[in-house]
Length: 180
Ligand SMILES: CC(C)(COP(=O)(O)OP(=O)(O)OC[C@H]1O[C@@H](n2cnc3c(N)ncnc32)[C@H](O)[C@@H]1OP(=O)(O)O)[C@@H](O)C(=O)NCCC(=O)NCCS
Image (cartoon, rainbow, N blue to C red; front, side, top):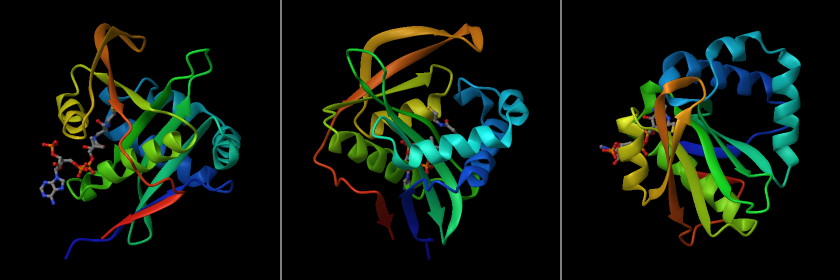
């Protein structure tokens, strides 16, 4: 039987869980993210605590955590860019290898998209490293397509990333969703 999957918005006191998921994702899939594991490991615990506290209440940026049978097993960020265009982004998506292919990634993207749509977003953007073919296919299956924007990755200037976008489907606007 498949485990039940739940996604919930991060709570103010989840700095340690946030740090654990973030470092696990950077250790397991360093090719997928703009930050490095070294940066995350050298950051003070208080940095993660402050981010969790901000993401628990902010209207501009947040994180959602995936749980399988109550255990944290994935993460996604959602934010509005601090610019006049005010575009809505999902980022830092990661699902623990042991629970992949169970639609946890889809649940995270849809929940984060629903949160952004609840604040007025009609399009959701995501940067994907070109070499991350698995993530590219995953986002395309969810209805994301190319915007034409393409740029070098700051962490690895010999590599590129592509900006994808999807129009917001009518999704639930909730701080928690479950897939059984
Ligand atoms: C990309 C990632 C988040 C996907 O997570 P996931 O939980 O496996 O995602 P889903 O289960 O929703 O979908 C993954 C695939 O499984 C398929 N799938 C979902 N449920 C399935 C099932 N019951 N049986 C078989 N396949 C299934 C989906 O169709 C999808 O197929 P595709 O890759 O061919 O498009 C995960 O692979 C990951 O964390 N990768 C490393 C980090 C990364 O690349 N992050 C993205 C940064 S941009």
